[in-house]
Every structure is written in C-alpha cells, then in structure tokens.
Length: 270
Image: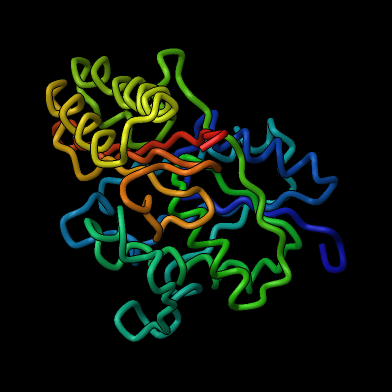
C-alpha cells in the first residue's frame, strides 16, 4: 500500500456493529482501509479485565472481509513495546487525561496515547476513524495528533446503539440478564439531562439529578458530568450552561461491568 491513501481503524477486536460502522465510514473516504486488532496492556489497570477481555480473531477477520477491509494488522506486544512494558517510552496528554474517566482509571489515557502514537507511526495513514462513544478518548487522540504533528485527519463516527438505546460495547456481554435490561437507563438519563439542560437547570442540579437517577436504578456511579464539547477541562461558569454545544457524560458500574456513554446537544439563546 506504499504511496496509497490509507484510512486506519484501530480496535481491540471482538468486533460488533459499532466497529463495522467505523470500517464503512473509512471506506467512504475513498482510501485503502486498514484495521488493527491489539488488546493494549498499557491501558488496563492492575485490577481491570485485560486477561479476560474477549478475543475473537477468527470471527473478527471474517467480519472485516465482509466489509471489504483491505488489510488486517495484528501487531504483538513486542512489536509495539520493543523495550518491554515497564521500560516503554511514555506519551502523556496533560489535563485531558486526568479528569472524568482518567480520575477513576489512572494511567489509562497514557496507555491509549502510547499505543495510538505507535500505531500511527507504523501504519502512517492519512485518515483515522474513531467512535464517539468514548468522547474523552476521542478528545485525547485529537490533542495527541495535533501536538505531535501527525499528518492525519481524525474522523469521528456516531455511537451505534441497541434498540433500547444502550451504546454497543464489547463489555456489554459481561452484563447479567437483569443488568442488561437496566443498562439502557444510562441513555435514558443522558436524554433527560439534555432536555433538563434546555429547560434551564444549573450544572449542579443536572449532575446531582443524573447521579440520583442512576443510583436509584442500581448503578454505582463514577461520574455524571456536563462539559463544553470543545473542551472537557472546562465547566459552566457559576453553574449556568451558556449557549453552545455541550456533552453529557456518564460512567457507571452495574455489577462488575463498567459502562460509559455520552450525548452531545446544543443550547441556544443563553
């Protein structure tokens, strides 16, 4: 593929309809599509699910073939971390990496940044496509790409949802049947937060209401937050949401499963 226009979709495998939407969007860029599968150890904490993260390479390869993906890239740990995990060069994105999910998963976004930088250097795409479900990760990658001057255009793909609104995720399969029916409450809460924000409630009222709703449904809540979509490090001045594009973000646990989701919306005439 030397000299050809390349669109890159990095994944951790166990592909579902959300991943395949990324492949289709990459194809629309009229480029050769490269998808990587690599379960990256540096973005998992010591008590997280690295060892049990679902690995379904045969099924993934067949799905990519059906979607006309041009190349499946399967690097191993030694390729991406030739000096070993402990001695590996670190990549940090200050500020963005330490808030929201970063506050609950220390080192997670440093691991994301490290692996994405390595993959970008190896694949050398002109375009890369990421899902919007992990809004903070997308923001980290945009900053990384800009600050390290990667000549890559970052594209986002809308979250793909189940019929009841639950954002598709490889981790959804960890949910027990009763938990699965409850999990859709996250998207219902996000939708209600958008509507209540448009009704004029303050930041403190919105975040407290969202937390109480989720806790009443049985979630252990890491955070409910509303932030300007263009800068997750800012909050509303004096608690009042100004005009502009906002994003409501939730991270919460049901049993052993941690779920994240978000919803962008616009406020006018503030």
